[in-house]
Length: 415
Image (cartoon, rainbow, N blue to C red; front, side, top):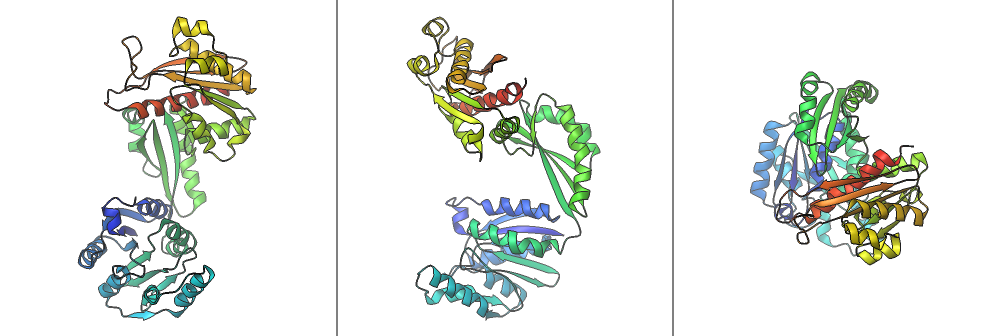
């Protein structure tokens, strides 16, 4: 079975609202074993909406639409679908009753135009909206299915998870399961070069690389009648790939670097503290995004000035005078200082020239040092992170964060 996603709303075309619905639905369709080859966005215009629906139904068995189910005159998704299939609209009393109860509970006045949301094409399957007023629905006719969902992501995702997904699973003979391998420190072309023959050889599961900021993700996807069968196909391929990149894989289904680091620290029962100069608190902020980070992260120190490095981290004046703030020696003393003063088992630090000004011939923009300190070992790395862009300050800081966390993940947890 194939599906196409058609998102409705002029606000999407204007860029006023980011279309997160399409990404979410795409992932869920894949998990249900339903192929998706096209995605479209159309504004709140009856003629263009009708044309887009007709085109989508010529190349897909199913169209999933979001938006255009509200109470205003330009919410025309249901009407357009009904016209396409030659169906009359009728009042769905249970939907109207739920809507009126919703307004009553929230203390809001129910205006007459809201009744429009309770009119449905005859014979439609109705999906209740537990987070808003507009119900969703599905129309099946002439071998085609059109599913219509509300546009607000919170309403759409809840409806999809609880009602639409069971509706879809019953119409698919197989499922798709994926696992994601996270690789740091290698570009997409280098990863593909190593994996080229494996990617050609494996057809189920398939191996697909995706370049993201600072890393490459390898998605291993299998098609099977059930989850257990799919997982059995995926497991040996994941093991094979991880063995090919022993120094670059930082996790499988890890989500991101900070999640992988907090998870590893928590499992090992170890603690970490962070000293940051050029990254200005970004590492600490990312680590605290992870639920449960308090079990592993003790503190973060943003020591931007030289004096703060001396006062809060114990960096020596002599080190700063001899080597400068951007140096391996300073980075090591920062990592050691934050570890000792916080009582953490692991300290990491960053210092560098993020630009666009401040660089010299000896210490150019993009020069960054990251360091790690534990009771057993200390290590610093010199990085050249500039790519020559006019405005790359954020890129340099982002890469510095990733390298520091990766250093903690790779070296800090080794005894």
